[in-house]
Length: 138
Image 1 (cartoon, rainbow, N blue to C red):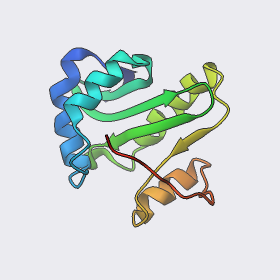
Image 2 (tube, rainbow, N blue to C red; image 1 turned 60 degrees about the vertical axis):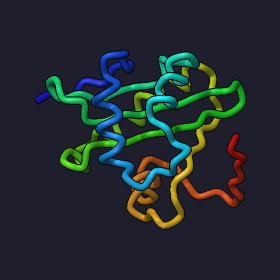
Image 3 (cartoon, rainbow, N blue to C red; image 1 turned 120 degrees about the horizontal axis):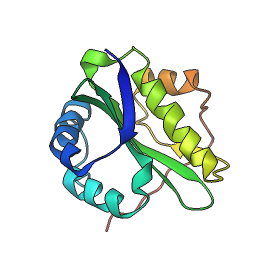
Image 4 (cartoon, rainbow, N blue to C red; image 1 turned 180 degrees about the horizontal axis):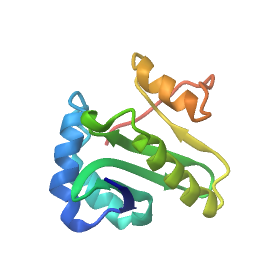
């Protein structure tokens, strides 16, 4: 099987939501997959990528660039296909797109207790920064 990474298509929605429910089962209630997909399709849709093996959607990554910094969201790979380079391929692809847009720095957030994911990002050159993450829900 050959991995294909391409931009999200509208008919991917059900498969993406199913994947996110599997990969992010403890996502907070304010993360509404259908709403997040709709919003992303309206703002920089070229930064919403999916990974396919044959016709099976097995991974996603979503990113944004505000002209100052880039952010990565929803990097997820079906657990049956993890540790096969798919997450790395998705990240490299979206990093390339952001670099092409002139993005000088890419940020992401992970849960503090997710050591496995921290190790993954460290293997890609990311490091922990001395920052306090703050947010406000509307």
